[in-house]
Length: 111
Length: 178
Image (cartoon, rainbow over all chains, first blue to last red; front, side, top):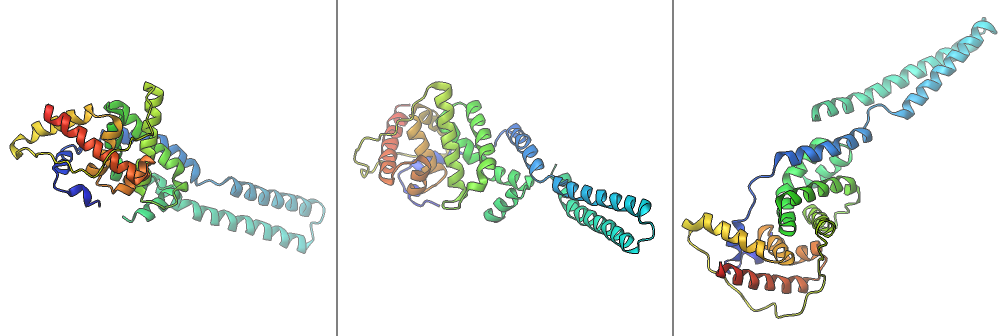
């Protein structure tokens, strides 16, 4: 705080009568309306990167399933590898959902 | 709440923190905008644009000054820009040298005349030029130091002292004539 302004020259007391008491409420809602879409895009819970990775994992699983079913139906190694890809995809989606939930709740609460 | 924490939360996308920050400083911003734009509607538009800019450029705030000083500088620049566009207004950068040390005092009326005094002061401020009303606003209403005022206006500290002296002198002349 600036103590110089409190000098007893009368100006401080006179100027203090000019404090605004309130600010129009529409101003706050106007600002928040213009800002909220920007925040939502910034912290969007759905990540494009995660969707792409998940799609690639599922595609790999489908390709291995196809190969294992039609060309190597008795290959245990291929079957295990296929299962591993599927488990990886499931683990990935669980991780992303776990990450998404707090963001989603936060957004719902701040509206 | 800690201001630094608040800023961090806003940068992480927390809308509620921005609302809180707005409520904390909106009156100061509106008061400063009013002292330049004079009209309430224009001042409100300036405040709105300023807070949008604050949100946009918050990541650039390096905490070299207080957040309030940084915000008021944005409001000041936005108000000057607005006035230039709307009213072809020119903010004159030059301040002529004059003695800023001579003390000026003004008599304070009785508490009974409070409402009348408030109106008289408001009328006096509206008759001062923008620079004078801005410097009085920052120094006496916002209670900022000479250095903080200089940072907001982009002047040197001695320029602010001269401007403040001139503002007090003109305020006294106008106030006593009313």
